[in-house]
Image 1 (cartoon, rainbow, N blue to C red):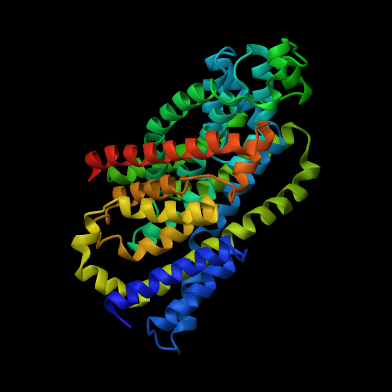
Image 2 (image 1 turned 90 degrees about the vertical axis):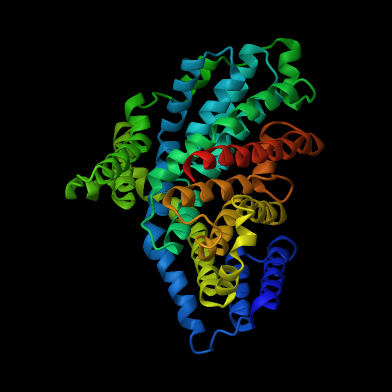
Length: 455
């Protein structure tokens, strides 16, 4: 099968995958693998070649990105368990002041979710949010929304969160290039500006219209626990430098290696340290110093074991996305798209954004939307005019923007935010769902602004 019929078959395959995940509750790994096999058969790939195509797509993904995802998840868990995530949050509060709770929650959420999953980040930071609400007598809903969106933006944009890492690796590999995580991080930071501004404005506005169940303390003026008492209840927090080091040092190492390479003065030692696997591995070692500092080394085995249980499903879903991408690349669909690339090129970044948004809205998981969309888009990158290193990084952002549009009842994060934020379900739709639509649109607009400077 070739041409338009193959495109139609591909669309049907994606619809089947979405229905299997969202309606039949089939695990994304099995859904993507099954659809990959079916599409390989329909696309006419010779039967004797299909196992090799599937195996290559699966193993290449594991080989190139598996260690990075595991190390990134381990850093996040160590920061969470040692109180370093709380220390980073406390540093932000001290910077912006306790009387600006919405801004404090927005910024600390954005920082903490770079290594920590947004679901976990919300649970970790929610006690601080509640304490700030009680201290400042500001809207509980406004702080909930600000925290949720700060976490969500970096979760979808900035490595070492697994979704952006996996998407970046898939896209760069599709172009035959070495993955440039530093460039993705820079793009993620720049692309965060407009959605963060929109998040702050939306949080302030919606806080005046919606009230949460935990705002009774505000009405009575009762302060049950001060902010200082809350921080003290966690015991002695780690040193500030040690808390930020597992995130900052790997970024600096990758930046140094990239800068030297671009200047034509690459030094093997720094090239080695700047490799994503080595740089993030050094981040893990620095995070272990936190464990030693907190005298919790006896918990390291359990922390590692729990992290592998968390990272495992992400790794397998990512590898399944690699399988789908390799099947697409091995079919005649890419040749057909190449011949008609001028049509898709007109959509530019909007094509991966819309595809990711459809997947996100339909099945709920931002990570699945990121990984699956990247696998679909990777073989087409050059043909649709996104084949440079900078545009590949920006495509990760466009996919991430779609992966946050929108969060509703089929998204576990929706329930974390509404339940911990003491909101009713209908209020969750007014805040989390409507707000993620706004920040998703703001994100793709921000991506287009960057596009005009890097194309």
